Amino acid sequence: MSRGGRVLLIIHDVYQEDNIFPLGPAYIASALKASGAEVTVACQDVFHYSNEELVRRYLQNGSYDLIGVGFMAARFKETVLDLCEVINQYKGGAWLVLGAHGPSSIPEYMIKTTGADIVAIGDAEETMVDLLKCKIAGGNDISNVDGIAFRSGDGVVVNKRREPSRQLDRFPFPAWEIFPMKDYADCVGLKGMEEGGKVLAVITGRGCTNRCNFCYRMESGIRLRSINNVIEEMKILYQQYGVRHFNMQDELFISSRRRLLEFRDALKSAGLKITFNCDARVDIFDEEIAHTLAECGCVFLNFGLESSDQNVLNAMGKRTTVEQNIKAVRIAKKTGVGIGLNFLWGNIGDTEASLKSNVRLIRELNTYYHLRTIRPVTPYPGCDLYYEAIRRGLLSGPEDFFERFKNSDLLTVNFTDIPEKQFYESLFNVNKELIIDHYEHTAGDMKEANHLIEQFYNLYFKGEYKFRGARHYDRKQEKVGGRK
Image 1 (cartoon, helix red, strand yellow):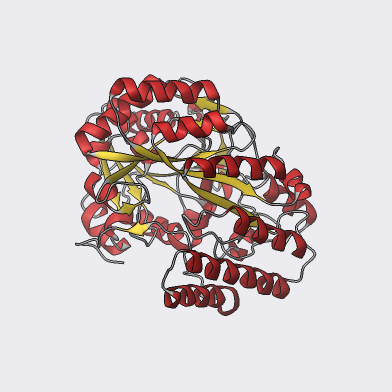
Image 2: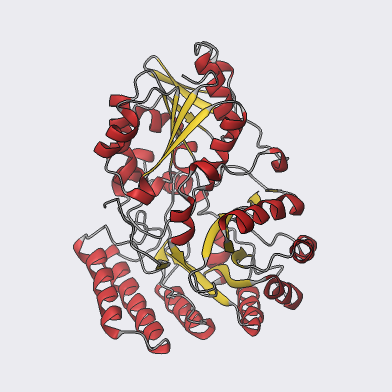
């Protein structure tokens, strides 16, 4: 038994081969290791271990102090609920700790539903270290740990929130050494990468300067790492793991012109010749930013345009205009980078006219870099739209949400005046149009296009909920040794 405690972090399966490196657990693992803990990771996402295999490989003969599972709300009923049931059967004296966006906003419900011992709310590096110290000391002072909810008799106690750290440089780099790095680096193919290249995720800051009504992030504002700290991490990934393409996982990578210019200069000084993809807001985007991004190696730029209707953008709290959306995309197109045009439909104020307008704008601005389709908005617990649904009587709470939620390409709550059957008919017709348009412009296989159209039809009208949507990365290799 490690004197610093033993922790098992489980990366649950997402039933696909294009797995993004799990930065959250990797940061938590690093913080725990720095405190003296022995940390093991079970990557169900990579190896597709069944829950029974998870028991045999990790739980049956393990003796842990903490077992951590992080997840998004979309995976809760499909995957996490059964996983928690199995963990509870075999956890021994360990505390089962849930974390990430899924449980953070509704910790009482999650503890009562899953049988978990604790929910770590928000950023969890320091929280998990404090919990482990508490556990190996006998567990009597858990009420003094900030940023958690915990089971107490038949009830749940929610402690005061932990103040999010604004000094992100003090966190150690992710604990790459305990993860199957080759599997993560080799499994995704992105356009613009060198053939056979490796890609891994990096996050240069946490949070965003805005809050859209469908965003379930709990903290306000943006917290940034220093550029020097980011470059040091990228150098390790470049030199030790052969990474040449970086998946910038920030909610908002381009937060200021000054920071982007500093990033460009630091890349040059470090001699890092890379490619990367990132997200950007349209309201600060201009020719200088577009040119600088291309100079740095950006090959794909994701814009959350969301709507072509200004009234809908206003209702979202987007704080952008349709004109800014169009201008930013047109500027970006001149650089030759691939562009992601992200649109949602079904938000407050949306109509049949706004849907058709969205399609016209996608077709006008499209670079056909990725297949773009339109999803209905989902009011995940924690976002403003979720609480608006409760206020309107469209949802009664988290249990009602999870009963209704089946797939992120389906309606959970209808905020429009359009009957549900007509809503799906309209959405199917425009997505069919977008799929055909994409394949015609890319000389793709129309059999593949028709198959994708059939999948959307079966999702909307036949309840085949396992469909994962149209925007997967390219699969680079088949996994061995695991199973779905």
